[in-house]
Image (tube, each protein chain N blue to C red):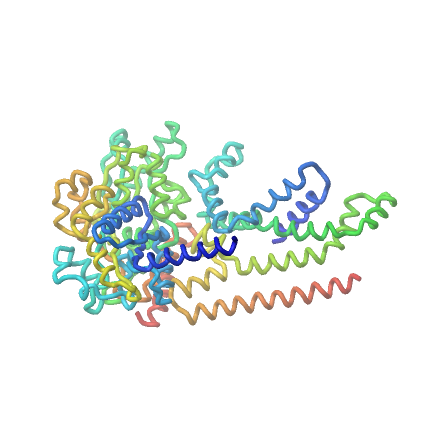
Length: 214
Length: 421
Protein backbone atom coordinates (compact mmCIF):
# COMPACT_ATOMS: atom_id res chain seq x y z
CA UNK A 1 0.00 0.00 0.00
CA UNK A 2 2.79 2.42 0.85
CA UNK A 3 4.44 1.24 -2.36
CA UNK A 4 1.26 2.10 -4.19
CA UNK A 5 1.15 5.54 -2.60
CA UNK A 6 4.77 6.37 -3.45
CA UNK A 7 4.55 5.00 -6.98
CA UNK A 8 1.17 6.64 -7.46
CA UNK A 9 2.54 10.07 -6.55
CA UNK A 10 5.54 9.62 -8.85
CA UNK A 11 3.33 8.56 -11.75
CA UNK A 12 0.99 11.48 -11.08
CA UNK A 13 3.89 13.96 -11.05
CA UNK A 14 5.13 12.60 -14.35
CA UNK A 15 1.69 12.82 -15.86
CA UNK A 16 1.23 16.34 -14.57
CA UNK A 17 4.28 17.53 -16.48
CA UNK A 18 3.81 18.78 -20.00
CA UNK A 19 5.19 16.52 -22.68
CA UNK A 20 4.16 15.22 -26.08
CA UNK A 21 1.64 12.40 -26.15
CA UNK A 22 0.54 13.07 -22.59
CA UNK A 23 -3.09 12.14 -23.23
CA UNK A 24 -2.02 8.82 -24.68
CA UNK A 25 0.16 8.01 -21.68
CA UNK A 26 -2.62 9.01 -19.30
CA UNK A 27 -5.00 6.64 -21.04
CA UNK A 28 -2.41 3.85 -21.10
CA UNK A 29 -1.72 4.30 -17.41
CA UNK A 30 -5.32 3.50 -16.58
CA UNK A 31 -5.29 0.11 -18.31
CA UNK A 32 -4.28 -1.98 -15.26
CA UNK A 33 -7.10 -0.39 -13.28
CA UNK A 34 -9.60 -0.85 -16.10
CA UNK A 35 -9.05 -4.58 -16.71
CA UNK A 36 -11.32 -6.75 -14.56
CA UNK A 37 -9.24 -8.11 -11.69
CA UNK A 38 -9.97 -11.75 -12.41
CA UNK A 39 -8.78 -11.34 -15.99
CA UNK A 40 -5.59 -9.49 -15.07
CA UNK A 41 -4.87 -11.92 -12.24
CA UNK A 42 -5.19 -14.85 -14.64
CA UNK A 43 -2.86 -13.09 -17.09
CA UNK A 44 -0.36 -12.61 -14.29
CA UNK A 45 -0.76 -16.22 -13.21
CA UNK A 46 0.36 -17.28 -16.68
CA UNK A 47 3.20 -14.76 -16.78
CA UNK A 48 4.37 -16.00 -13.39
CA UNK A 49 4.07 -19.70 -14.32
CA UNK A 50 7.20 -21.50 -13.22
CA UNK A 51 7.78 -23.52 -16.40
CA UNK A 52 6.35 -21.41 -19.21
CA UNK A 53 6.06 -17.96 -17.63
CA UNK A 54 7.54 -14.94 -19.39
CA UNK A 55 8.75 -13.34 -16.13
CA UNK A 56 11.08 -16.26 -15.41
CA UNK A 57 12.15 -16.28 -19.03
CA UNK A 58 13.09 -12.59 -18.93
CA UNK A 59 14.89 -12.86 -15.60
CA UNK A 60 16.84 -15.87 -16.89
CA UNK A 61 17.70 -14.07 -20.12
CA UNK A 62 18.97 -11.12 -18.10
CA UNK A 63 21.04 -13.50 -16.01
CA UNK A 64 19.41 -12.41 -12.73
CA UNK A 65 18.36 -15.93 -11.76
CA UNK A 66 19.73 -19.26 -12.95
CA UNK A 67 16.75 -21.48 -12.25
CA UNK A 68 13.08 -20.63 -12.82
CA UNK A 69 11.33 -19.42 -9.68
CA UNK A 70 7.92 -20.78 -8.80
CA UNK A 71 6.31 -17.47 -7.98
CA UNK A 72 2.87 -18.65 -6.99
CA UNK A 73 3.83 -21.96 -5.36
CA UNK A 74 6.81 -21.09 -3.15
CA UNK A 75 5.38 -19.88 0.16
CA UNK A 76 8.13 -17.29 0.60
CA UNK A 77 7.61 -15.85 -2.89
CA UNK A 78 3.87 -16.11 -3.30
CA UNK A 79 3.19 -13.23 -0.91
CA UNK A 80 5.52 -10.99 -2.91
CA UNK A 81 3.97 -12.12 -6.17
CA UNK A 82 0.53 -11.20 -4.87
CA UNK A 83 1.78 -7.83 -3.59
CA UNK A 84 3.45 -7.09 -6.91
CA UNK A 85 0.30 -7.81 -8.89
CA UNK A 86 -1.83 -5.78 -6.51
CA UNK A 87 0.57 -2.82 -6.68
CA UNK A 88 0.57 -3.02 -10.45
CA UNK A 89 -3.18 -2.92 -10.44
CA UNK A 90 -3.83 -0.25 -7.83
CA UNK A 91 -1.10 2.30 -8.59
CA UNK A 92 -3.15 3.93 -11.39
CA UNK A 93 -5.97 4.50 -8.94
CA UNK A 94 -3.72 6.38 -6.53
CA UNK A 95 -2.10 8.23 -9.41
CA UNK A 96 -5.48 9.31 -10.71
CA UNK A 97 -6.59 10.79 -7.39
CA UNK A 98 -3.24 12.53 -6.85
CA UNK A 99 -3.25 13.84 -10.41
CA UNK A 100 -6.65 15.42 -9.83
CA UNK A 101 -5.26 17.15 -6.75
CA UNK A 102 -2.12 18.28 -8.58
CA UNK A 103 -4.13 19.96 -11.29
CA UNK A 104 -5.99 22.07 -8.77
CA UNK A 105 -2.86 23.39 -7.08
CA UNK A 106 -2.54 27.19 -7.12
CA UNK A 107 0.33 28.28 -9.37
CA UNK A 108 1.28 31.30 -7.21
CA UNK A 109 3.08 29.15 -4.63
CA UNK A 110 5.29 27.75 -7.36
CA UNK A 111 5.97 31.15 -8.83
CA UNK A 112 6.98 32.40 -5.40
CA UNK A 113 9.27 29.41 -4.92
CA UNK A 114 10.80 29.96 -8.33
CA UNK A 115 11.44 33.61 -7.56
CA UNK A 116 13.13 32.60 -4.29
CA UNK A 117 15.24 30.06 -6.22
CA UNK A 118 14.29 27.02 -4.14
CA UNK A 119 15.41 23.56 -5.20
CA UNK A 120 12.59 21.55 -6.91
CA UNK A 121 12.93 18.63 -4.43
CA UNK A 122 12.43 21.06 -1.54
CA UNK A 123 9.48 22.56 -3.35
CA UNK A 124 7.94 19.11 -3.64
CA UNK A 125 8.27 18.29 0.04
CA UNK A 126 7.38 21.76 1.35
CA UNK A 127 4.71 22.88 -1.13
CA UNK A 128 3.33 20.07 -3.27
CA UNK A 129 3.15 17.30 -0.71
CA UNK A 130 1.29 19.24 1.99
CA UNK A 131 -1.14 20.53 -0.61
CA UNK A 132 -1.99 17.10 -2.00
CA UNK A 133 -2.06 15.40 1.40
CA UNK A 134 -5.89 15.41 1.67
CA UNK A 135 -6.21 13.69 -1.70
CA UNK A 136 -3.46 11.26 -0.80
CA UNK A 137 -5.17 10.43 2.48
CA UNK A 138 -8.38 9.63 0.63
CA UNK A 139 -6.48 7.45 -1.84
CA UNK A 140 -4.71 5.63 0.98
CA UNK A 141 -7.92 4.96 2.91
CA UNK A 142 -9.57 3.55 -0.21
CA UNK A 143 -6.60 1.30 -0.80
CA UNK A 144 -6.44 0.27 2.86
CA UNK A 145 -10.04 -0.86 2.77
CA UNK A 146 -9.45 -2.63 -0.54
CA UNK A 147 -6.40 -4.39 0.86
CA UNK A 148 -8.28 -5.53 3.95
CA UNK A 149 -11.08 -7.09 1.98
CA UNK A 150 -8.97 -8.26 -1.01
CA UNK A 151 -10.19 -11.48 -2.51
CA UNK A 152 -10.08 -11.86 -6.29
CA UNK A 153 -6.36 -11.37 -7.04
CA UNK A 154 -5.29 -13.83 -4.38
CA UNK A 155 -8.00 -16.37 -5.07
CA UNK A 156 -7.01 -16.56 -8.73
CA UNK A 157 -3.25 -16.54 -8.13
CA UNK A 158 -2.82 -18.90 -5.21
CA UNK A 159 -6.29 -20.25 -4.46
CA UNK A 160 -6.73 -21.52 -0.92
CA UNK A 161 -3.05 -21.78 0.02
CA UNK A 162 -2.73 -21.01 3.71
CA UNK A 163 0.28 -18.69 3.28
CA UNK A 164 -1.66 -16.03 1.37
CA UNK A 165 -5.13 -16.49 2.83
CA UNK A 166 -6.95 -13.21 3.49
CA UNK A 167 -9.88 -12.61 5.80
CA UNK A 168 -12.31 -12.61 2.86
CA UNK A 169 -10.97 -15.89 1.56
CA UNK A 170 -11.29 -17.38 5.02
CA UNK A 171 -14.88 -16.20 5.35
CA UNK A 172 -15.73 -17.54 1.91
CA UNK A 173 -14.17 -20.88 2.71
CA UNK A 174 -16.29 -21.26 5.82
CA UNK A 175 -19.45 -20.04 4.11
CA UNK A 176 -19.24 -21.72 0.75
CA UNK A 177 -16.86 -24.65 0.95
CA UNK A 178 -17.70 -25.89 4.43
CA UNK A 179 -21.35 -24.75 4.29
CA UNK A 180 -21.00 -23.38 7.80
CA UNK A 181 -23.26 -20.34 7.54
CA UNK A 182 -23.03 -19.37 11.21
CA UNK A 183 -19.25 -19.40 11.48
CA UNK A 184 -18.78 -17.84 8.05
CA UNK A 185 -21.23 -15.04 8.81
CA UNK A 186 -19.42 -14.38 12.07
CA UNK A 187 -16.13 -14.14 10.16
CA UNK A 188 -17.66 -11.75 7.62
CA UNK A 189 -19.13 -9.57 10.35
CA UNK A 190 -15.80 -9.47 12.14
CA UNK A 191 -14.12 -8.44 8.89
CA UNK A 192 -16.65 -5.64 8.52
CA UNK A 193 -16.01 -4.44 12.05
CA UNK A 194 -12.24 -4.53 11.60
CA UNK A 195 -12.54 -2.44 8.45
CA UNK A 196 -14.92 0.00 10.16
CA UNK A 197 -12.59 0.34 13.12
CA UNK A 198 -9.55 0.95 10.92
CA UNK A 199 -11.47 3.59 8.98
CA UNK A 200 -12.63 5.44 12.09
CA UNK A 201 -9.19 5.43 13.68
CA UNK A 202 -7.56 6.49 10.44
CA UNK A 203 -9.97 9.34 9.81
CA UNK A 204 -9.60 10.54 13.40
CA UNK A 205 -5.81 10.53 13.25
CA UNK A 206 -5.79 12.06 9.77
CA UNK A 207 -8.05 14.91 10.80
CA UNK A 208 -6.09 15.61 13.96
CA UNK A 209 -2.82 15.72 12.05
CA UNK A 210 -4.22 18.02 9.41
CA UNK A 211 -5.80 20.22 12.08
CA UNK A 212 -2.50 20.43 13.97
CA UNK A 213 -0.63 21.34 10.82
CA UNK A 214 -2.76 24.36 9.91
CA UNK B 1 -37.46 5.27 -34.12
CA UNK B 2 -35.42 4.45 -31.12
CA UNK B 3 -38.48 3.25 -29.20
CA UNK B 4 -39.48 1.01 -32.04
CA UNK B 5 -36.12 -0.71 -32.31
CA UNK B 6 -36.10 -1.13 -28.54
CA UNK B 7 -39.56 -2.65 -28.73
CA UNK B 8 -38.39 -5.04 -31.43
CA UNK B 9 -35.41 -6.00 -29.36
CA UNK B 10 -37.66 -6.67 -26.39
CA UNK B 11 -39.97 -8.84 -28.51
CA UNK B 12 -37.05 -10.81 -29.87
CA UNK B 13 -35.75 -11.35 -26.37
CA UNK B 14 -39.15 -12.53 -25.16
CA UNK B 15 -39.46 -15.01 -28.01
CA UNK B 16 -35.95 -16.25 -27.41
CA UNK B 17 -36.80 -16.52 -23.75
CA UNK B 18 -39.85 -18.63 -24.47
CA UNK B 19 -37.89 -21.02 -26.63
CA UNK B 20 -35.26 -21.21 -23.93
CA UNK B 21 -37.84 -22.08 -21.31
CA UNK B 22 -38.31 -25.58 -22.73
CA UNK B 23 -34.56 -26.20 -22.56
CA UNK B 24 -32.51 -28.25 -20.19
CA UNK B 25 -29.21 -27.05 -18.87
CA UNK B 26 -26.37 -29.42 -18.14
CA UNK B 27 -23.11 -28.62 -16.40
CA UNK B 28 -20.04 -30.34 -17.80
CA UNK B 29 -16.45 -30.29 -16.70
CA UNK B 30 -13.89 -28.72 -19.03
CA UNK B 31 -10.75 -30.67 -18.15
CA UNK B 32 -8.98 -31.80 -21.32
CA UNK B 33 -11.43 -32.86 -24.03
CA UNK B 34 -14.31 -33.18 -21.56
CA UNK B 35 -16.35 -30.25 -22.77
CA UNK B 36 -16.13 -31.16 -26.45
CA UNK B 37 -17.19 -34.74 -25.73
CA UNK B 38 -20.05 -33.57 -23.57
CA UNK B 39 -21.27 -31.17 -26.24
CA UNK B 40 -21.15 -33.87 -28.91
CA UNK B 41 -23.07 -36.28 -26.71
CA UNK B 42 -25.68 -33.67 -25.89
CA UNK B 43 -26.01 -32.76 -29.57
CA UNK B 44 -26.81 -36.37 -30.40
CA UNK B 45 -29.52 -36.44 -27.75
CA UNK B 46 -30.93 -33.16 -29.07
CA UNK B 47 -31.18 -34.62 -32.58
CA UNK B 48 -32.84 -37.73 -31.23
CA UNK B 49 -35.27 -36.13 -28.78
CA UNK B 50 -35.98 -32.77 -30.40
CA UNK B 51 -35.31 -30.87 -27.17
CA UNK B 52 -32.61 -28.28 -26.91
CA UNK B 53 -29.99 -28.32 -24.21
CA UNK B 54 -27.58 -25.70 -23.04
CA UNK B 55 -24.15 -26.84 -21.90
CA UNK B 56 -22.42 -24.75 -19.25
CA UNK B 57 -18.79 -25.31 -18.37
CA UNK B 58 -17.62 -25.28 -14.77
CA UNK B 59 -14.30 -24.56 -13.01
CA UNK B 60 -11.54 -27.15 -13.49
CA UNK B 61 -10.78 -27.41 -9.80
CA UNK B 62 -13.17 -29.86 -8.15
CA UNK B 63 -13.12 -27.82 -4.95
CA UNK B 64 -14.31 -24.71 -6.77
CA UNK B 65 -16.87 -26.67 -8.73
CA UNK B 66 -18.44 -28.02 -5.56
CA UNK B 67 -18.70 -24.51 -4.12
CA UNK B 68 -20.49 -23.35 -7.24
CA UNK B 69 -22.93 -26.26 -7.12
CA UNK B 70 -23.65 -25.75 -3.46
CA UNK B 71 -24.45 -22.11 -4.05
CA UNK B 72 -26.84 -22.95 -6.89
CA UNK B 73 -28.50 -25.81 -5.04
CA UNK B 74 -28.79 -24.06 -1.70
CA UNK B 75 -30.57 -21.21 -3.47
CA UNK B 76 -33.02 -23.85 -4.77
CA UNK B 77 -32.34 -22.61 -8.24
CA UNK B 78 -33.52 -24.57 -11.27
CA UNK B 79 -30.93 -22.90 -13.51
CA UNK B 80 -29.03 -26.13 -13.99
CA UNK B 81 -31.03 -29.32 -14.46
CA UNK B 82 -28.29 -31.92 -14.81
CA UNK B 83 -25.16 -31.75 -12.69
CA UNK B 84 -21.91 -33.59 -13.28
CA UNK B 85 -20.92 -34.54 -9.72
CA UNK B 86 -17.78 -36.07 -8.25
CA UNK B 87 -17.79 -39.53 -6.74
CA UNK B 88 -17.33 -38.02 -3.25
CA UNK B 89 -20.32 -35.67 -3.41
CA UNK B 90 -23.50 -37.82 -3.48
CA UNK B 91 -23.66 -37.88 0.33
CA UNK B 92 -23.33 -34.12 0.55
CA UNK B 93 -25.66 -33.16 -2.27
CA UNK B 94 -28.26 -35.94 -1.92
CA UNK B 95 -31.00 -33.73 -0.38
CA UNK B 96 -30.96 -31.56 -3.49
CA UNK B 97 -31.11 -34.39 -6.03
CA UNK B 98 -33.99 -36.48 -7.33
CA UNK B 99 -34.24 -40.25 -6.93
CA UNK B 100 -33.45 -41.45 -10.45
CA UNK B 101 -35.03 -44.84 -9.75
CA UNK B 102 -38.41 -43.12 -9.92
CA UNK B 103 -37.77 -41.80 -13.42
CA UNK B 104 -35.72 -44.48 -15.11
CA UNK B 105 -36.94 -47.96 -16.12
CA UNK B 106 -36.28 -50.82 -13.68
CA UNK B 107 -32.88 -52.47 -14.00
CA UNK B 108 -31.15 -49.47 -15.56
CA UNK B 109 -28.22 -49.82 -13.19
CA UNK B 110 -27.81 -53.62 -13.53
CA UNK B 111 -24.91 -53.48 -15.98
CA UNK B 112 -22.92 -50.86 -14.07
CA UNK B 113 -20.09 -51.36 -11.56
CA UNK B 114 -21.90 -52.23 -8.37
CA UNK B 115 -19.48 -50.31 -6.14
CA UNK B 116 -20.18 -47.02 -7.91
CA UNK B 117 -23.94 -47.57 -7.93
CA UNK B 118 -23.76 -48.28 -4.19
CA UNK B 119 -21.71 -45.14 -3.71
CA UNK B 120 -24.38 -43.13 -5.54
CA UNK B 121 -27.24 -44.63 -3.57
CA UNK B 122 -27.93 -42.54 -0.50
CA UNK B 123 -30.55 -43.82 1.96
CA UNK B 124 -31.98 -46.10 -0.70
CA UNK B 125 -32.29 -43.33 -3.29
CA UNK B 126 -30.26 -43.45 -6.51
CA UNK B 127 -29.13 -39.82 -6.67
CA UNK B 128 -26.71 -40.08 -9.57
CA UNK B 129 -25.87 -42.31 -12.55
CA UNK B 130 -22.21 -43.33 -12.99
CA UNK B 131 -20.85 -41.54 -16.07
CA UNK B 132 -17.17 -42.31 -16.02
CA UNK B 133 -14.88 -43.71 -13.38
CA UNK B 134 -11.32 -42.73 -12.65
CA UNK B 135 -8.30 -43.99 -10.80
CA UNK B 136 -4.86 -42.48 -10.58
CA UNK B 137 -2.29 -44.01 -12.94
CA UNK B 138 1.40 -43.44 -13.64
CA UNK B 139 2.39 -42.13 -17.06
CA UNK B 140 6.00 -42.70 -18.06
CA UNK B 141 8.24 -41.99 -21.04
CA UNK B 142 9.00 -45.33 -22.69
CA UNK B 143 11.74 -43.89 -24.89
CA UNK B 144 13.67 -42.35 -21.98
CA UNK B 145 13.51 -45.40 -19.71
CA UNK B 146 14.81 -47.45 -22.62
CA UNK B 147 17.57 -44.93 -23.35
CA UNK B 148 18.86 -45.21 -19.79
CA UNK B 149 18.22 -48.94 -19.55
CA UNK B 150 15.76 -48.63 -16.66
CA UNK B 151 12.73 -50.74 -15.78
CA UNK B 152 9.28 -49.36 -15.14
CA UNK B 153 9.26 -48.44 -11.41
CA UNK B 154 7.26 -50.60 -9.02
CA UNK B 155 7.96 -48.68 -5.82
CA UNK B 156 8.03 -44.96 -5.04
CA UNK B 157 11.66 -45.32 -3.95
CA UNK B 158 12.58 -46.81 -7.33
CA UNK B 159 10.67 -44.03 -9.08
CA UNK B 160 12.68 -41.45 -7.12
CA UNK B 161 16.00 -43.07 -8.06
CA UNK B 162 15.14 -43.41 -11.74
CA UNK B 163 13.74 -39.91 -11.98
CA UNK B 164 16.96 -38.57 -10.48
CA UNK B 165 19.14 -40.51 -12.94
CA UNK B 166 17.20 -39.56 -16.03
CA UNK B 167 16.78 -35.95 -14.95
CA UNK B 168 20.50 -35.56 -14.39
CA UNK B 169 21.28 -37.24 -17.72
CA UNK B 170 18.79 -35.18 -19.71
CA UNK B 171 19.94 -31.94 -18.17
CA UNK B 172 23.52 -32.77 -18.98
CA UNK B 173 22.41 -33.38 -22.55
CA UNK B 174 21.21 -29.80 -22.65
CA UNK B 175 17.52 -30.26 -21.78
CA UNK B 176 17.56 -27.65 -19.00
CA UNK B 177 13.86 -27.69 -18.11
CA UNK B 178 13.64 -31.44 -17.66
CA UNK B 179 12.06 -32.84 -14.49
CA UNK B 180 11.64 -36.32 -13.11
CA UNK B 181 8.09 -36.40 -11.78
CA UNK B 182 5.05 -34.15 -11.89
CA UNK B 183 1.80 -34.56 -9.99
CA UNK B 184 -1.02 -32.44 -8.54
CA UNK B 185 0.38 -30.48 -5.60
CA UNK B 186 -1.86 -27.43 -5.31
CA UNK B 187 -3.75 -27.08 -2.04
CA UNK B 188 -7.03 -28.53 -3.35
CA UNK B 189 -8.97 -31.79 -3.57
CA UNK B 190 -6.48 -33.21 -6.09
CA UNK B 191 -3.71 -33.13 -3.50
CA UNK B 192 -5.91 -35.09 -1.10
CA UNK B 193 -6.16 -37.77 -3.77
CA UNK B 194 -2.45 -37.81 -4.63
CA UNK B 195 -1.34 -37.88 -1.02
CA UNK B 196 -3.84 -40.57 -0.08
CA UNK B 197 -2.36 -42.69 -2.88
CA UNK B 198 1.12 -42.34 -1.40
CA UNK B 199 -0.03 -43.09 2.11
CA UNK B 200 -2.30 -45.99 1.23
CA UNK B 201 0.45 -47.66 -0.80
CA UNK B 202 2.58 -48.25 2.33
CA UNK B 203 1.83 -51.29 4.48
CA UNK B 204 -0.31 -50.06 7.39
CA UNK B 205 -0.01 -46.51 6.02
CA UNK B 206 -3.73 -46.71 5.90
CA UNK B 207 -6.37 -44.13 5.47
CA UNK B 208 -7.14 -40.64 6.71
CA UNK B 209 -10.24 -41.89 8.46
CA UNK B 210 -11.16 -45.57 8.43
CA UNK B 211 -14.58 -47.02 7.65
CA UNK B 212 -15.55 -46.99 11.33
CA UNK B 213 -14.89 -43.25 11.49
CA UNK B 214 -11.68 -43.49 13.54
CA UNK B 215 -8.89 -41.11 12.64
CA UNK B 216 -5.91 -43.16 11.51
CA UNK B 217 -3.65 -40.64 9.85
CA UNK B 218 -0.97 -40.19 12.51
CA UNK B 219 1.21 -43.24 11.92
CA UNK B 220 4.90 -43.74 11.07
CA UNK B 221 4.19 -45.24 7.63
CA UNK B 222 2.17 -42.21 6.56
CA UNK B 223 4.96 -39.99 7.83
CA UNK B 224 7.44 -42.01 5.78
CA UNK B 225 5.33 -41.60 2.64
CA UNK B 226 5.04 -37.84 3.09
CA UNK B 227 8.72 -37.44 3.95
CA UNK B 228 9.62 -39.14 0.68
CA UNK B 229 7.14 -36.96 -1.22
CA UNK B 230 8.54 -33.81 0.40
CA UNK B 231 12.03 -34.81 -0.72
CA UNK B 232 10.86 -34.73 -4.35
CA UNK B 233 10.16 -31.00 -4.35
CA UNK B 234 13.06 -29.15 -5.91
CA UNK B 235 14.84 -32.45 -6.51
CA UNK B 236 12.85 -34.43 -9.08
CA UNK B 237 9.75 -32.24 -9.12
CA UNK B 238 9.72 -28.51 -9.86
CA UNK B 239 8.74 -26.36 -6.92
CA UNK B 240 5.89 -25.07 -9.06
CA UNK B 241 4.20 -28.45 -8.69
CA UNK B 242 2.90 -27.05 -5.40
CA UNK B 243 0.52 -24.95 -7.48
CA UNK B 244 -0.31 -27.52 -10.19
CA UNK B 245 -3.67 -29.10 -10.88
CA UNK B 246 -4.20 -31.88 -13.45
CA UNK B 247 -3.88 -29.66 -16.49
CA UNK B 248 -0.67 -27.91 -15.40
CA UNK B 249 1.08 -31.21 -14.78
CA UNK B 250 -0.13 -32.50 -18.14
CA UNK B 251 1.26 -29.32 -19.72
CA UNK B 252 4.75 -30.08 -18.41
CA UNK B 253 4.60 -33.77 -19.28
CA UNK B 254 3.06 -33.35 -22.70
CA UNK B 255 5.67 -30.82 -23.82
CA UNK B 256 8.27 -33.49 -23.12
CA UNK B 257 9.62 -31.92 -19.94
CA UNK B 258 9.00 -34.72 -17.47
CA UNK B 259 9.76 -38.42 -17.15
CA UNK B 260 6.84 -39.47 -14.93
CA UNK B 261 3.41 -38.02 -14.33
CA UNK B 262 0.63 -39.04 -11.96
CA UNK B 263 -2.68 -38.29 -13.60
CA UNK B 264 -6.12 -39.66 -14.47
CA UNK B 265 -6.75 -41.77 -17.58
CA UNK B 266 -8.21 -38.79 -19.48
CA UNK B 267 -4.68 -37.55 -20.18
CA UNK B 268 -3.93 -40.61 -22.34
CA UNK B 269 -5.99 -39.43 -25.27
CA UNK B 270 -4.35 -35.99 -25.13
CA UNK B 271 -0.71 -37.10 -24.81
CA UNK B 272 -1.39 -39.43 -27.75
CA UNK B 273 -3.03 -36.71 -29.87
CA UNK B 274 -1.60 -35.28 -33.10
CA UNK B 275 -0.37 -32.09 -31.42
CA UNK B 276 1.43 -33.91 -28.65
CA UNK B 277 5.23 -33.72 -28.56
CA UNK B 278 5.49 -37.18 -27.03
CA UNK B 279 3.03 -39.16 -29.12
CA UNK B 280 3.75 -42.93 -29.04
CA UNK B 281 6.52 -42.47 -26.47
CA UNK B 282 4.27 -42.89 -23.44
CA UNK B 283 3.35 -45.88 -21.33
CA UNK B 284 0.82 -46.20 -18.52
CA UNK B 285 1.11 -48.47 -15.47
CA UNK B 286 -0.39 -48.78 -12.03
CA UNK B 287 1.02 -46.37 -9.46
CA UNK B 288 4.13 -47.59 -7.59
CA UNK B 289 3.90 -49.33 -4.24
CA UNK B 290 5.24 -47.96 -0.98
CA UNK B 291 8.43 -49.88 -0.33
CA UNK B 292 9.13 -53.54 -1.07
CA UNK B 293 6.21 -54.88 0.98
CA UNK B 294 3.74 -52.17 -0.02
CA UNK B 295 1.10 -52.36 -2.71
CA UNK B 296 -0.06 -50.07 -5.48
CA UNK B 297 -2.98 -47.90 -4.41
CA UNK B 298 -5.09 -45.79 -6.72
CA UNK B 299 -7.73 -43.47 -5.37
CA UNK B 300 -11.20 -43.77 -6.83
CA UNK B 301 -12.30 -40.77 -8.80
CA UNK B 302 -14.93 -40.42 -11.44
CA UNK B 303 -17.97 -38.37 -12.21
CA UNK B 304 -21.67 -39.01 -12.16
CA UNK B 305 -24.72 -37.32 -13.57
CA UNK B 306 -27.44 -36.17 -11.22
CA UNK B 307 -30.69 -34.28 -11.68
CA UNK B 308 -31.54 -31.32 -9.50
CA UNK B 309 -34.68 -31.51 -7.38
CA UNK B 310 -35.44 -27.93 -8.47
CA UNK B 311 -35.45 -28.83 -12.16
CA UNK B 312 -38.69 -27.99 -14.00
CA UNK B 313 -38.39 -31.03 -16.27
CA UNK B 314 -37.09 -33.90 -14.15
CA UNK B 315 -38.30 -36.61 -16.53
CA UNK B 316 -36.66 -34.96 -19.55
CA UNK B 317 -33.47 -34.46 -17.55
CA UNK B 318 -33.48 -38.10 -16.42
CA UNK B 319 -33.83 -39.18 -20.05
CA UNK B 320 -30.80 -37.10 -20.96
CA UNK B 321 -28.86 -38.72 -18.12
CA UNK B 322 -29.89 -42.18 -19.29
CA UNK B 323 -28.76 -41.35 -22.81
CA UNK B 324 -25.38 -39.96 -21.77
CA UNK B 325 -24.63 -42.98 -19.56
CA UNK B 326 -25.79 -45.50 -22.19
CA UNK B 327 -23.28 -48.10 -23.47
CA UNK B 328 -23.03 -46.48 -26.93
CA UNK B 329 -22.24 -43.07 -25.52
CA UNK B 330 -19.75 -44.44 -22.97
CA UNK B 331 -18.02 -46.41 -25.71
CA UNK B 332 -17.69 -43.29 -27.84
CA UNK B 333 -16.25 -41.38 -24.88
CA UNK B 334 -13.81 -44.19 -24.12
CA UNK B 335 -12.53 -44.32 -27.67
CA UNK B 336 -12.43 -40.60 -28.38
CA UNK B 337 -11.40 -39.30 -24.97
CA UNK B 338 -10.09 -42.33 -22.99
CA UNK B 339 -12.73 -41.82 -20.29
CA UNK B 340 -13.18 -44.98 -18.24
CA UNK B 341 -16.58 -46.57 -18.84
CA UNK B 342 -18.68 -47.48 -15.81
CA UNK B 343 -19.88 -50.65 -17.53
CA UNK B 344 -17.63 -53.70 -16.98
CA UNK B 345 -18.63 -55.11 -20.40
CA UNK B 346 -16.91 -52.26 -22.24
CA UNK B 347 -13.51 -53.25 -20.79
CA UNK B 348 -13.67 -56.31 -23.02
CA UNK B 349 -14.75 -54.38 -26.10
CA UNK B 350 -12.15 -54.77 -28.87
CA UNK B 351 -12.50 -51.26 -30.27
CA UNK B 352 -12.17 -49.71 -26.81
CA UNK B 353 -9.07 -51.78 -26.02
CA UNK B 354 -7.48 -50.87 -29.33
CA UNK B 355 -7.89 -47.17 -28.55
CA UNK B 356 -6.86 -47.40 -24.88
CA UNK B 357 -4.76 -50.54 -24.30
CA UNK B 358 -4.29 -49.98 -20.56
CA UNK B 359 -8.03 -50.34 -19.90
CA UNK B 360 -7.34 -54.06 -20.25
CA UNK B 361 -4.06 -54.30 -18.36
CA UNK B 362 -5.12 -52.02 -15.50
CA UNK B 363 -8.65 -53.39 -15.11
CA UNK B 364 -8.03 -54.47 -11.52
CA UNK B 365 -6.61 -51.04 -10.65
CA UNK B 366 -9.87 -49.49 -11.73
CA UNK B 367 -12.09 -52.00 -9.97
CA UNK B 368 -10.15 -52.02 -6.71
CA UNK B 369 -9.52 -48.29 -6.40
CA UNK B 370 -9.75 -47.03 -2.83
CA UNK B 371 -12.42 -44.46 -1.95
CA UNK B 372 -11.82 -41.21 -0.10
CA UNK B 373 -13.46 -41.07 3.36
CA UNK B 374 -16.47 -39.13 2.11
CA UNK B 375 -19.12 -41.66 3.06
CA UNK B 376 -18.12 -41.88 6.72
CA UNK B 377 -17.44 -38.17 7.25
CA UNK B 378 -20.59 -37.02 5.39
CA UNK B 379 -21.00 -33.27 5.15
CA UNK B 380 -17.81 -32.75 7.17
CA UNK B 381 -15.81 -34.23 4.29
CA UNK B 382 -14.79 -30.85 2.80
CA UNK B 383 -13.31 -29.87 6.16
CA UNK B 384 -11.48 -33.17 6.53
CA UNK B 385 -10.13 -32.97 3.01
CA UNK B 386 -9.18 -29.32 3.49
CA UNK B 387 -7.31 -30.02 6.71
CA UNK B 388 -5.55 -32.94 5.04
CA UNK B 389 -4.44 -31.19 1.85
CA UNK B 390 -3.32 -28.10 3.74
CA UNK B 391 -1.16 -30.23 6.04
CA UNK B 392 0.30 -32.16 3.11
CA UNK B 393 0.93 -28.90 1.27
CA UNK B 394 2.85 -27.53 4.24
CA UNK B 395 4.88 -30.71 4.53
CA UNK B 396 5.68 -30.59 0.81
CA UNK B 397 6.68 -26.92 1.05
CA UNK B 398 9.08 -27.91 3.80
CA UNK B 399 7.45 -25.71 6.44
CA UNK B 400 6.98 -28.56 8.89
CA UNK B 401 8.22 -32.12 8.93
CA UNK B 402 5.87 -34.98 8.20
CA UNK B 403 5.58 -36.49 11.69
CA UNK B 404 4.87 -33.13 13.27
CA UNK B 405 2.38 -32.23 10.55
CA UNK B 406 0.48 -35.50 10.90
CA UNK B 407 0.31 -35.15 14.68
CA UNK B 408 -1.28 -31.73 14.43
CA UNK B 409 -3.54 -32.97 11.63
CA UNK B 410 -4.71 -35.77 13.91
CA UNK B 411 -5.75 -33.32 16.60
CA UNK B 412 -7.37 -31.01 14.07
CA UNK B 413 -9.42 -33.90 12.68
CA UNK B 414 -10.42 -34.86 16.19
CA UNK B 415 -11.67 -31.34 16.72
CA UNK B 416 -13.74 -31.61 13.52
CA UNK B 417 -15.01 -35.01 14.59
CA UNK B 418 -16.22 -33.65 17.90
CA UNK B 419 -18.93 -31.82 15.96
CA UNK B 420 -20.00 -35.27 14.71
CA UNK B 421 -19.53 -36.76 11.30
